[in-house]
Length: 189
Picture 1 (cartoon, rainbow, N blue to C red):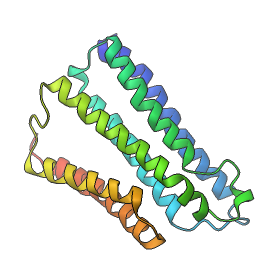
Picture 2 (cartoon, one colour):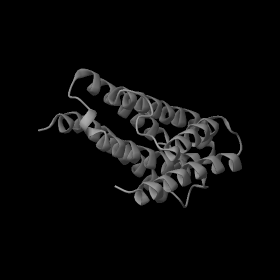
Picture 3 (cartoon, helix red, strand yellow):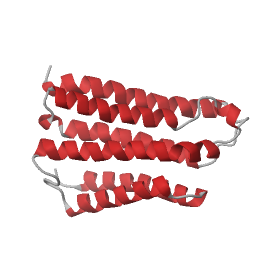
C-alpha cells in the first residue's frame, strides 16, 4: 500500500459519506415532492456541494505524490473532509415533508453550508501550497482567474439575499466548474 492509498482511505470514506448525505437528502425530497414545494435553491446548493466535493477528491488524486503518510496529512484531511461532511448533512432537511417547502431551509442553512465549503477550499489550497513548496506553483493565468472568481462568487453566495441572487451565484459557481473542466480537458498533457 502506498502512502497516498493509506492516507486517502480515510479521506475517501468521509468524502463518500458526504456525497451519500446529499444524495440521500435528494432522495427524501423526491419521495416527498407531493407534499413539499422544492424550488431551485436547495437543488442548486446540493449540486454545487457535490461538484465541490468531487473536485476536492480529484485534487487529492492529482496531488497524491506530495501527500505524505504522517499525522499532519491525516489530521488535515480529517478536518477538511469532516467539514465537507458537516456541510453536506445541512443541505437538505431531515424530514422534508414537515417543512412544506425547501426555501426556508435553504436560507437557514446556506450560510453554514457555504462557509464550510469555503473553509474546506481555503484549507485545501493552503495544504496544496505547503505540499508544493509555495502558493501558485505551476498555476496558469486561467487557474488564477478561475480561483479568484471562485472565491469571490463563493463569498458573495454566503452573504447575498433573495432567491434570484442566490440562484445566480450558485449557477455561476457550477458553470465555473464546467468551464474549468473544459479548459483542463483541452489543455495539452
